[in-house]
Image (cartoon, rainbow, N blue to C red; front, side, top):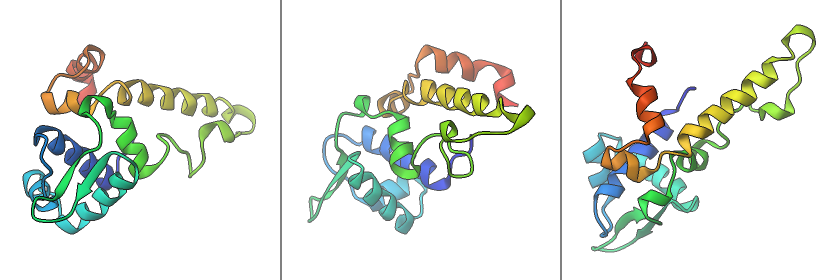
Length: 149
C-alpha cells in the first residue's frame, strides 16, 4: 500500500484537530504543529470539509474542527475523502478487472488486499491514533518485528 503525501497530511491534520479541544483552530496552527506546508494544508482542509470530516468557521474566533467526534471518524474515511477508494489497480476497482490465463488469480489477490486494508483502516479511528490506543489487532501486527522490515 502506498499513501500519498496528501493522505498523510490529512490524517495528521485530523489527529491534530482531535487533540485540540472543542474550539476551532487555524490552519496555520495545524500546519505548524504537524510540520505541513500551510498552502498545501489549506487545500486538504477544503477537501476534508467537502467530505464531511471537518467544519470551518471564518472570523477572529474561526478555524477548523472535526465535524463529528474523533471516535466516529475512521482512517479509511479520511483516506477515501482525499484519494478515493482504498485499493485501485491502474485506476480501476479490482472487481472490475479480469486477467487472462495464469494471471487470473491476481484479481483475488487484489480483492483480498483491499479487504485486509479495510479491516485495519476502518477499525482505527482518529481518536485511537490521537490517544495512542490502537485496537489490539493493529497493535499486535505493528509489534511483529517482521512488519518493520
